[in-house]
Length: 220
Image (cartoon, rainbow, N blue to C red; front, side, top):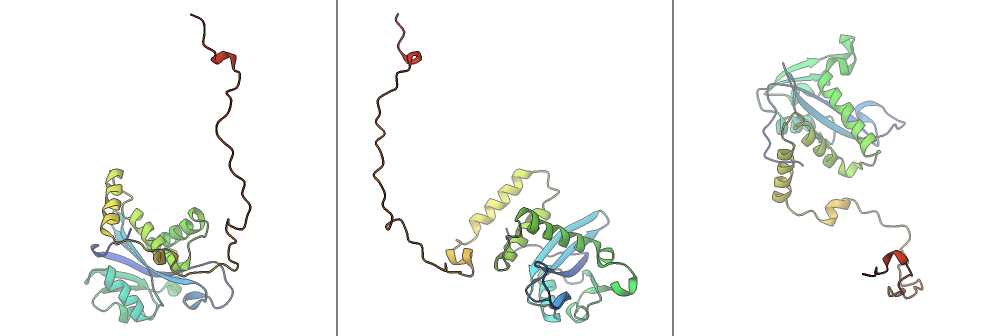
């Protein structure tokens, strides 16, 4: 459901990151262990939210954030973010509007409502629809699916959405087994297979028809 020829976001764009993963003990925030960092960007217009982009990133450094922004947001756009120290250098070439959440007295979702609402919906999708089954190795594919649906939420032709999905499926290269498993996890014990079990010969399907009076031929 992803595509490399997408038009970049433009105009006013909210950008932030979130951690995806269950509740774990240890260091909180951007440096928490055992979780995956996801960056998000969503257009905000006078008529509501526009298009969305989501991507797994290796960290919250200026290099990682700049790679995500330059790949998904058109130069010259206005980027609204929190006051994380990496954003000023990551957003060179953009109009940057930092929001100091701690100084504002508001919550993060109150300061950046659009992207935080998206993050909440994505996590609800993973926990609700997929029952927490989305592995870290395949998280980007789950994010791509959500972005595909989100960006077409206002379409009036559901058949056109399905056609676009078929077009991408045809244009995409084949998916190999290694792409599906991503990280192989061998079984602890090898399956014994059917050869070690005694199997009886299946019975014949031929049988004498039961005496059913209602199926007898009626006299003429």
